[in-house]
Amino acid sequence: ARCHCPLSTRCGMNLRTWCTCPLTSRLAAATAPVRGRGARKLPLPGLRARNEGCDKMQDGQDGPSSSPHMVSPSGTLDQFAPNPDYDSCRSLINSYFYQITLGCGTVHCTNRNCFSCPEGPRLDPTSAALLAVKLAQSTTHYLCAGAAITIPESLQWTDSGQSAEVLPLKMMLEKAASSAQAQVELSAALRRCLSNPDSLSWSFLKDGKPSRATEHQSGIDCNAVAEAYSTMLKPGQGPLAIVNTRGELTDSTLPDVVAAALEDLCRGAIVPAQGTAHKLEPLRLFVIVLLFPGLMEPEYHNTIFKKLCSAINSLSQEQRDMIKCWMSECPAKMFRDTIVAFQQFITIYVNEYRCIDDHVASATKVLGILWGTNQMAHLVSFKEFYNDAINELVDFTEDFARWKDTQRCSFSFCAHPYVLDPGTKSKLLQLDANNQMRSQIRGALFRSIFGGSECPYLILKVRREHLIRDTLLQISACQHQQEDLKKPLKVIFKGEEGIDE
Image (cartoon, rainbow, N blue to C red; front, top):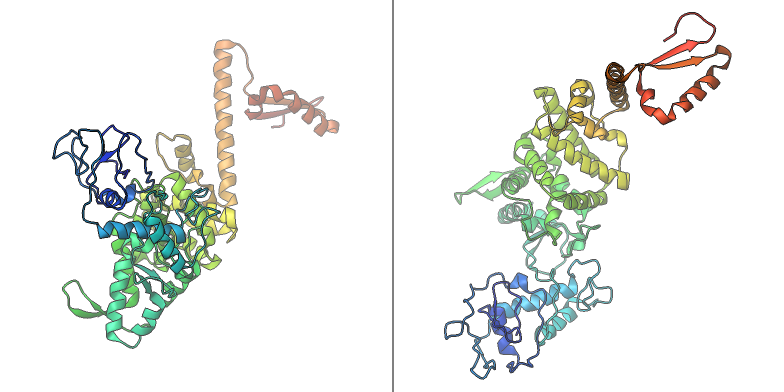
């Protein structure tokens, strides 16, 4: 058997592998012994994810301690039959099952045993399980790189009945209304799933069934998210029985349990780790948390809002673009509420602190992602992005200077025009025109001193009876010297004394 474990050691003869990987050992036992230099190579693409836990390899030298795969002096690989590793067998079958039913997520997958392939299988769960067992027994394995996944425990609004790891949230909420034990189970499930990035990334999916994310579709049922939040955060709910960290039974409320779980989520590392760039599912949690209505509450600004904005801005541009695309799936009302939450945060900070710090800059950048979403889906009016506090309280003369001098400051509202109203934008255009005019005057004066005479003004000589004609002719004549058009204007009327400016 051929192992794709990166820690394996090649013996140099027909790419035979000396490896203590349990999956390699299992496959070696399940297949016929490989002999001679004409041995058949058995490709196992995509199994790296399953081989990450293999033991450290030997240095590859001959000897009894080098590897369980021993090479005889005649150059043949002796038959080796270890005890079957049932966990590895089960993992291999599960990988095939998920590949057949969910796919690898690759847009142009060519593996005909993968759901993502246009010619791939479209089977019911029972037939898919039978095919997965049959493929796992084969001597040649073709697994896609993204197929070796394990679906974690997750919350689904509807009960699909597919797996014990799927927790039907709607049913649990109904049971909690009449049973203290059900309340304890509900609170524990919310804490586990909402505070765990992996669990939350596989929660609230369409039809309650696990599905892979693509660049254009997240697989999240945004209506289910909205209904779940609306039910759990409904005001006036009674106490909820929970078990605290000391193991004592006490009372809390459902909104507090949800908020505490999301606080624990943001307290940890929610940015996808390196090595998961080809997996899009970890980005789903950002969409779910962005739709959290509690973002409007100032009490969660420090614990959830700031950390969420910082995490989103830490993503790569490609990942932020995918979130921008996925947010277009949201209902218009939820999308508007998310915008209001960001506007409220920025307004509070600008009004109270009268400064532009990293938190305001981070929130404004995330608001730009939502603005990009609205450009694609047209969910709300563009006026929803105007911020009155920014337009009224910010000194745009200073902000414009920061925008021009990027080395002085990396952030300015001028670089994010979606928050500026037309009045502020007209002021910025006037500031820019005045700056260019002063620059041209200084340049003309210096050139006149060192290089000859040059007028610092744009002078137009026109006749009153042909005012428009003469003006257009002279401006057209200046097209080859467009810098002159940025100079201050002076008008001379032919045949008249005085100069009108």
